[in-house]
Length: 195
Ligand SMILES: NC(=O)c1ccc[n+]([C@@H]2O[C@H](COP(=O)([O-])OP(=O)(O)OC[C@H]3O[C@@H](n4cnc5c(N)ncnc54)[C@H](OP(=O)(O)O)[C@@H]3O)[C@@H](O)[C@H]2O)c1
Image 1 (cartoon, rainbow, N blue to C red):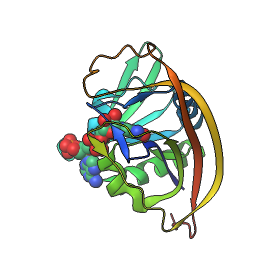
Image 2: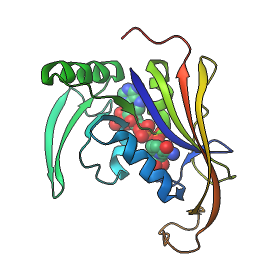
Image 3: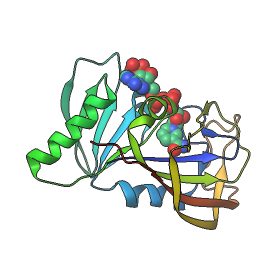
Image 4: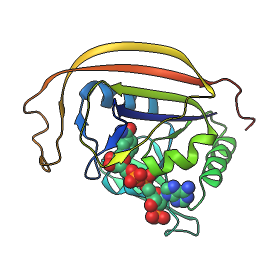
């Protein structure tokens, strides 16, 4: 089962200047808790600005970096397997193959950005969505299509965090924090994909 994880504002913003348009510790912790030890597939733009994701299997989709190339990156915190492919279904199959070879049951997450989610949405059976209840400035938008999904869990929170603006290019992440309303939601596809 392929899962998607994303955070989105009330006006469908997911990105600003190549990064997240907010700094919300609870959402980062939520992302970490769900994706630790799992396969994470991201688009090449997200990969370029992604902080290190230790203890996750990172797979990158790019049309320019094909054909399939496999490389290991040793970081101070651990080894990340990185695999690049020009095809999302091929990467999803590679994750399943990896699980079969290693006899593991590791989940596969699509972790963004907008371009990857748009073309990969059809493969997703479960969505972990964080709604950020703010009108946010951004340059990357995503409008999830929930027409085949059922809301199966929901948790509302009021947290402390920071919303970026277009002119706060190098933001002090911890300065000017304020209350932000967020909702963690889970959606499940009404009829699960066969794979
Ligand atoms: N709020 C969130 O939850 C969240 C999560 C992740 C990212 N983001 C934000 O989203 C923004 C980046 O999103 P983005 O839409 O610009 O970029 P992206 O989806 O991360 O990456 C786009 C690139 O990925 C490759 N790609 C995407 N779909 C493909 C497909 N079907 N087949 C082959 N290659 C494919 C292409 O790479 P090539 O050009 O190399 O071919 C494409 O240019 C950033 O601001 C990031 O911080 C937000």
